[in-house]
Length: 316
Ligand SMILES: C[S@@+](CC[C@H](N)C(=O)[O-])C[C@H]1O[C@@H](n2cnc3c(N)ncnc32)[C@H](O)[C@@H]1O
Image (cartoon, rainbow, N blue to C red; front, side):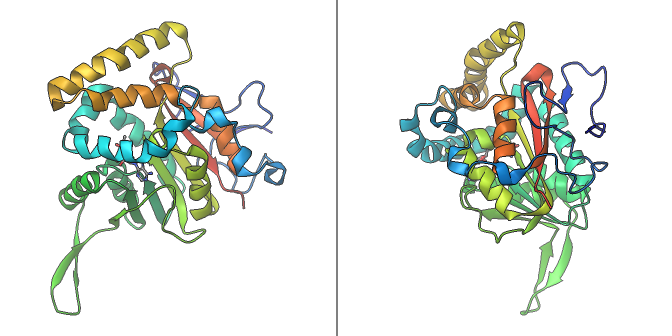
């Protein structure tokens, strides 16, 4: 089977590439863009193993993440984001030299091309992706979910200033502002939604922070409707050694220093390095996406592999 050409793969843009087939992988990987035929599954999901053996034990938290660390990961991560919430946005710009905006725009464009009506942004943080999705899909209902009250407070303030509001009169006759975006405090490990609730689910720079990647994907799969699309933007490890070495030095030494200079707090920025090292390779993430049951998986690599947008479709 031939895959549909990727609308957002830009030939000649340094460091960007889209994988629509992986040598050595059994499945054909396609871009779930608007030209992909819904239901044109290329993977027989009935043949997939149960979720608890999606990956072997070391992959549950990544190769360098001791399993004993996992039970505490949620609390640790909550503490990290409670501490850095106020500096999160400026640090994001500095860390990525503003490139995260461009990567997020790719996610928003791909997802929006499918014309979704109900969209969930998991681990929405300070809300930039959710706000962009709400803007790009003005007729859709967008929900941003995160377990950090501190991050959500900032998201709500941003949405109030960055999104056009309409007014609703409540039973008491009071005029209340509303938009097509709302935020919810909740855990990605137990999404508070019924099965098949959403047309599209996004998660940006969130999965790496979760204690159980497979469980999050299963939850996302559950709340997606058949033919719904999943997009995961995440930090990644460059494959080429000549890129990986400077990347590791940058993550290990420069980011904590930047955290200290800008936010007065280096230790939280060590987490970005730790969690990125421990995260799945791009191909392992593809395997996890496939084994969860998604079809037409693929990924687009950014900045010589330092981040990647993965996707998959829930079969009809
Ligand atoms: C690096 S931030 C990403 C925020 C935003 N999506 C972005 O792209 O800038 C990771 C977010 O994941 C959230 N998070 C981590 N684990 C979570 C979980 N189990 N459930 C919900 N949110 C979680 C954190 O609170 C944090 O806001």
